[in-house]
Amino acid sequence: MVKYSKSVKVGDKIPEDYKGVFELDVYDFLETLNPPKEFKLEEIKPCYFFITSGDAIQKTKFLKDKIWNYAGTARKRLNQMKSPSNKAKEFEKECWKQAGAVTKLLNALEKARGSAVFLETEWHDQTLYCIPKNPRTKK
Image (cartoon, rainbow, N blue to C red; front, side, top):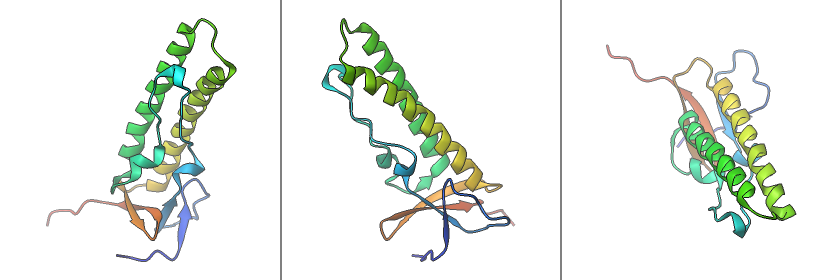
């Protein structure tokens, strides 16, 4: 396993001509969505989408779809409540805030990927790194 001594955090300014790896802390962008019981929805922990290695962009696109659908469902259920609590109203607002935040994460990852084809995730010493990669070309 490679040790990454120098990395730039995803979302930070990328130095010109930077060709290194990026450190991703999902909680710099997103928070866990833990709904009140009246919503009858499951909790969403964004870090769970990055447990295995793979393309960070594809993982984030899947998470984005999930959170946007979740926010829509939360709004629908809030509107069906006869007298929603303040906690329910705040949770629905938080869902839409997280929907915007996941879009910011996706934009930051696409910027980090640059001209590479993939932005591969890899865990090392409790840290998630994103490595811009291009597939091998046939000779």
